[in-house]
Length: 241
Image (tube, rainbow, N blue to C red; front, side, top):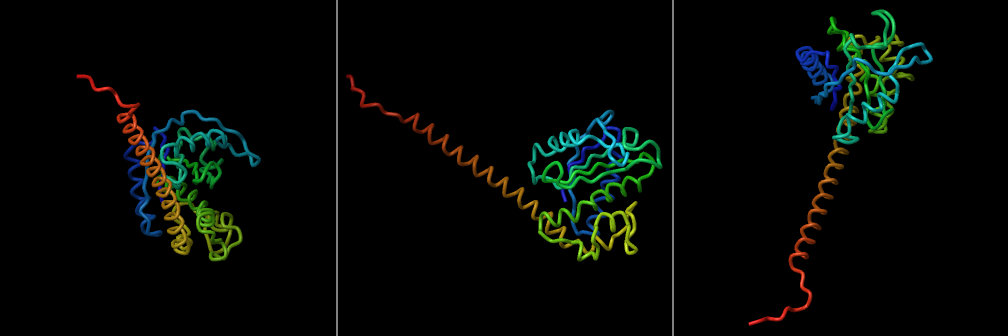
């Protein structure tokens, strides 16, 4: 469960570390996975938005695509599982006050072979920050399991609309995720998510191994050509006394 965190420069290092420790403990407890985090400080003082068909303000897809491309440039398609766009509420442009708008959006496999999470960082309420980040990643889990393992998790969870019924709590068995709800869903998905994340990690290692083999092959060819150059003979020179 590997993250690239595009962290708003307004989020303090102390606040981020506190969230990170809570996040690690949460996934270790409920999924048996120790997540990793690569942090890239990002300026969100201004970013392009549009109004969708529901009247919600969202960042443009072109902008999110650019962020995603920059995030995976170094590690490649399978070098991370989540690109987390974490924006401090002072810079958040997707709500007009504390009761309207949206606090996050999950984009599963929209901008690449990763899941991008657009998340609001609450200035005063740590539970809201944690809940939003958990909520958006929870949205992605059925897609990750299906893409990486081929398993449709919905019948095992006894639902027909995963996002609507579980993450958003429109089912008597589940609650809308605001903080740490629906932990039973994680227990059911745990072995499938473990397999899915390991599958993605294996793909990344296979790509890295292939690149290393290519580098070694090219280096061997260069050494061989250098030896040829150093040992060229064009006829036999006359020996003069």
